[in-house]
Amino acid sequence: MLTASSPLIKFSLFAVQLFLLLFICPTITIAQQKSVTGNVTDETGAPLPNISVLVKSSKAGTSTDASGNFRLMAAVGAVLEFSSVTHESFSLTVDSRNEYKIALKQKVDAMNDVVVVGYGRQKKVNLVGAVSMVTVDEKLVSRALPNISSGLTGLIPGLAAVQSSGMAGNNEASLIIRGLGTVNNASPLIVVDGMPDVDINRININDIETISVLKDATSASVYGSRAANGVILITTRSGKGMRKTSLNFNSNSSITKPTRGMDFLEDYARTLTLHQQRQAVNSLPGNQNFRNGTIDQWLALGMVDPIKYPNTDWWDVILRDGRFQNYNLSATGGNESSNFYASIGLKDEKGLQINNDYKQYNARFNFDYKVKSNMNTGVRFNGNWSNFTFALSEGFTDPDPGNTAGNDMQFAIAGILPYDPKTGYYGGVMAYGEDPQAYNP
Figure (cartoon, one colour):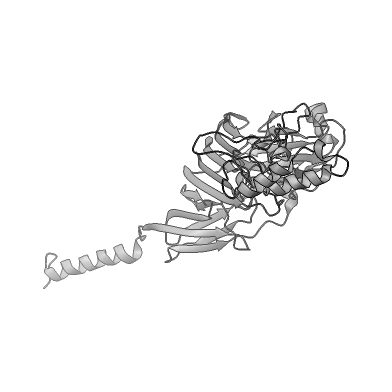
């Protein structure tokens, strides 16, 4: 006979309880998270920066860096959502892999793009005037551009960007919208984050998010007569859509070499002979600037004593390989009510000519705070400092008509010693009869 306290009955009751716990009661599982990394590109394989990566039904998320890479914590079975303004959204379920490669398709319906137009933003489908927009992405930022004006060449229909000089610090492009409309100043109005009359070439290209160009007369309804030549609206970056703080660093560099140049006649005795032969056409030998003895002396002693009788190739002396370097460090972050963007940048440019250097330092801080659903406030700070070194305002020439001192490359003769390292003196005119205005660059 079995009683309630017998071991067999106790074992049966324990087995029933275990069965109910494992198969009838709801199963409780704890998902273990792991580190998930990946790379996001477009259809051509180019990396996509600033792509939002969110874990569905969670507050976790991040964004891709300048190389399209991302890293976050997610559990197996979690759904990752990739979204961008310029590309179609994409969802991915996390499996046993730890690394993923994602290719996003570009949005075809460009009529739904958001464009900055004066006060506020509109969709292209609702626009009346002629407006073009350029998004400053990795393809534009990765180029070694000295300034944003020269980078707009060929990007916007109706906008002509003409660069007339390659001199470091003076290589900006003149911008004209839909041709020259006046004999006076035909430059468009530049507006940066709502602030008009800003020098576009002083802006750090890494801080720019979008550029909108208002081409026709409808822009005058907002900006008045200053918009007669069109308006270029620049919107700088912010931390909108960011869930956590991220740091980005990018740099690029380039080397510039002259492709075409003039051959300088560094044989000073020969140049004096050419002057003498030219004057012999209509001048007597006694009225010529250079004597035969001076020419013979320079020809004989030029290779013996190059300090007293120099034969200087000025193009070889003043030309060098140019160099451009750009560094930028930025931080972005935000939440549902506020966001920020901060950056510092350095641009170091060395021109093709000696004594032509340009350095520019940039700093920017943008902060936005959402007071109410229909009220925002914010702060915009931007500062830049530069150091510009040059010999002549146009590189090799001085356009000032009042300059009669000969400070121009056309007055640089081969018979001048650039610099004497023994005495520490710079050379000057040494040949009898030479123009006293001859120039030592």
